[in-house]
Length: 405
Image 1 (cartoon, rainbow, N blue to C red):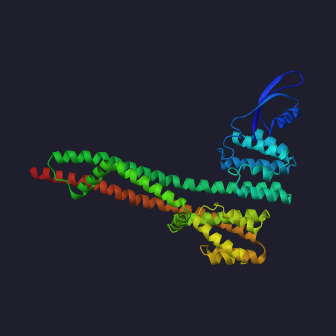
Image 2: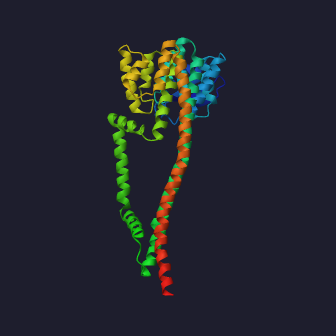
Image 3: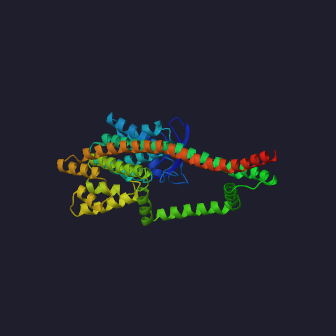
């Protein structure tokens, strides 16, 4: 929907200039008339639609969470959705989201549903968002569905933040290790070796090895860095292919500790996604179509889920199809089977989501705590080699001085 820069006048002859979203100049004139203004001239913005709105537009998950919470709360108060969006566009501090709220409002005024209006921005609102919004409108329970969506996105963001926080310490330690190795091997040891060589002292084998490795890196650093970048790009291209991505994610699950974290996060997403959509009234077919739309974060488990969906279409129960496809833990299969037999499938997935959330936190804590002794061993080994490569020739110097006297 284009945005017009207009020039208008009120009843007193005061000239106003501004910008407004409208379908065409006739619609622009109508909107200004409602505000008590008479259109003098209107010019369509050359950029057409708001730049970036069909992309993410810099809209972060936290912005959407606030948007959804504000929308659900105002709707629960009984306010009309158009005035709610109008208030939201004024209250939100995020400019891209203000523009999107204005466009949604204009689409609603033209007779579209909220689901249809939000569908104009597929890079901002995911299929899960749109599915829950549509079910909320059809069931007449839109405020509750939007609130559930906000809660779900908040859980997703908290999980992502917890993983990021857990990786800060290991990343910092690795950088420190690399910096220390670079300084000692790249500068300190070669300087000492030059002094000892000038004194006519034969360097020990370990020291010569370390110096040779340092010299090799200094001479060939460009080719080494280029090779590393090439391998990373090759791995990324391989991962982007369908079969390559499945294979990479399959082997990630086999890594100690890291694989447990990745698997539990994926199972937690399946559980929370399914519970949220099931409680909103979305049918099983639509739920699986959304789950299979690259939302789980692990292509191998998603492929297993795709095979299970084929079994469901053939008449199998969810538990049976998941068990046949393989790749899912017995606990998840048992809980789903119990939920299907008792008619409490949504509650079963909610409990599974809570369980896997706790497992993610527990495994992340184990990963962080186990990293400390591994770091100590790694640092000890590196500094041991460096210290020995320095002390051994110094020991020879002391021995020769002692013999001289």
